[in-house]
Length: 164
View 1 (spheres, rainbow, N blue to C red):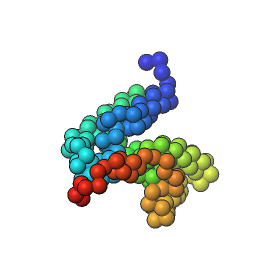
View 2: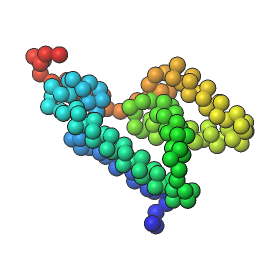
View 3: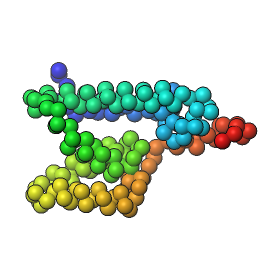
């Protein structure tokens, strides 16, 4: 293949960020995530946007599966649960809906997991669970401040006479 997994991951993340922040589909995705009804009033078709989002998610999951199989040499139907749980934890750390924050949350999770394995051993999973629960209780948007786009930039351009 000629590329390291870090390069593939970085290229995939850059492509996803470019899609989300630089295309009409990305704008429609952000608007639909913020308020599907307002997005529909502005001409976005939420059902198509949601379908496209699931297709992109499935493609990214397939890429992750290929990377996993190439790294470990085997694939089983049950092996995605723990990575999925870790991805959810990373999203919680970074803030749900904050793509850059989820990436930083994943890196934070990896550092905590590596340091925990070295210093506290088998209790690492319990500590991560407690940290995740505390994060969810303390800040529903995650501890990393959101610098992401907000729908107010779209809804502010909406005519004032449109019924809500």
